[in-house]
Image 1 (cartoon, rainbow, N blue to C red):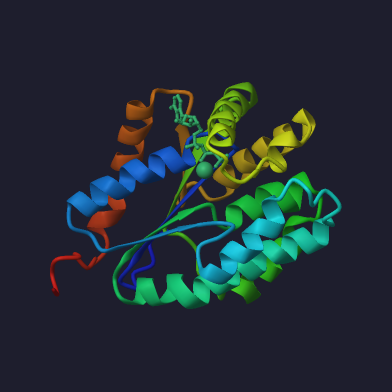
Image 2: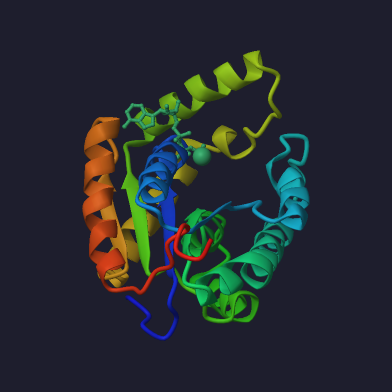
Amino acid sequence: MTDARRPGLFLSFEGMDGSGKTTQMRLLIDRLRAEGYDLLETAEPGGTPIGLQIRKILLDSANQELSSRAELLLYFACRAQNVDQWIRPALAEGRVVVSDRFTDSTLAYQAVGRGLGEGIVREIHRFACREVQPDLTVYLDVDREVGLARARARNQERAAAAAPDETRIDDEAAEFHDRVRAAYARLCDQEPSRIRRVDAGQSIDEVAAAIWSAVEEHIAAHSLRKATADV
Ligand SMILES: Nc1ncnc2c1ncn2[C@@H]1O[C@H](COP(=O)(O)OP(=O)(O)OP(=O)(O)O)[C@@H](O)[C@H]1O
Ligand SMILES: [Mg+2]
């Protein structure tokens, strides 16, 4: 739902590993920048310098013993820092914030996937994020096999380039993935006006076009700052 009380626009990308979030976010950001919008680009877990330190703990494949509750709190520690340091100030200034994942990921992966429960995740969200929610969430829905195949191909390319190993969640069982995908489907049903499901099995261009039509509707409803307007 569009929040008319703040000038900025908050967009988030959601979906399983390999669904195309980073690819589509890149394309959207390039397009918004070309149109002159002032953007804050962020990713979870990560974003702020402190968040990037937390990300290393969360995604290191050596940390198999990380407990589910510790994992949940680390995700929210990262998010709280991002909201306070970057996201709220940017929205107050009328910028477009684009985040690769936000609380919906925690609702899908930790609340349902890890079985921690939706109630506690929503409660911690209220404390950590102080009610900050995306105006529009793009959910890239893809079959498990397609998403995993894409993520594995990409990770192999990265390994060849000696990038850090971030495969801990990729190694989870198929059953876990199915539960997470079902959780995303329920979130779409619960909040159809905020979360836009896009068939991510389509070509990159087709997915980008579907996303742009959803974003355009929201741009029209906000008084956004253009990057060139005050320089
Ligand atoms: N629609 C598409 N068709 C074919 N390949 C795609 C499509 N979208 C993305 N890809 C490719 O799939 C791989 C994974 O995409 P990407 O990294 O954007 O996914 P992601 O959702 O960000 O994954 P992760 O959650 O693991 O970060 C990349 O190599 C990308 O080029
Ligand atoms: Mg990504």
